[in-house]
Image (cartoon, rainbow, N blue to C red):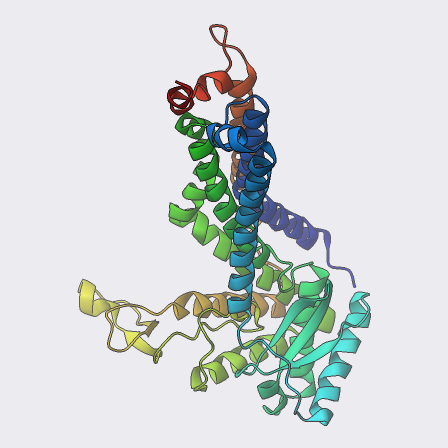
Length: 411
């Protein structure tokens, strides 16, 4: 299958956008953890770590053991917190053992057909006990796999609908964007773990060496803070995930030569998701990777029609929105519904012969990605230079580690 140079260019661009965002956040945190460790080791070697020196006066071996245990505990805490989050996010993501084998074989045939067409070895197909008619591409044992829910086997989908679903998931695998290997889940877990570890290491350096050492560590947390508070960047990450689905739809449409069936399958599964009474836990991260994403919130969520003219006084078309009854707030489902609308609009364009699955990469956004990476790199370089370049005969490291507490103890 030939994807086309235009689609390939967009795939490369949005992949680079994901990597740029990951580098902007993760690189400073990882650098901060390493820098904290180096600071601690150098301070101990130079006799500038007052806690180590105090314990060393009693027993040097004990001081080394205490330091190693403290470091091991910090790394262990960060690792355990990440594992706990992963387990929580994978809640209710399990394999179903009882299902219709005839329907399973039908899905497997569809998966094998589209996999061979795209030039991939057919990935294993699992039946998942997720209470929704859906499918997903995921990673297991370092290799990609495809999951279809037990409810999908009961839905009476046609052969073409099954093929459309499987083509979409195979397209995700071809893009390298399958569960836990995409830019979202792995990025979030890495940022969370490194953030916790960086915080613990910075606290250790502050207590064990000097509070002035924070002057070299705090700037490294700035990119993470910016991403957390900047609504535009948070929106950008959501849009990147949406682009992955748009690309997968486009490739699937090329693969099956039947964009109409894919579009109708998306609309059908969304309609089924509105009728389902099942509730997937909000912690279940996998719901963002399903063939049709539908956040299921605590309590009922329904679509209502809001007349814009009632509020503005002018004549406007009515707008459909999702609402949480009993609360004066809009549901989180709006973004998922908007994504479905964009996907179906994209496939309608493809039906008309217009392959416009994504906006063309803008030069401004390209420059923004480069500027973000350059700024982060500059911060790390400046911190290293500030630590090692002498100023008035002393380096920044020497100024920061002139420990008043240790001098008082020595007296």
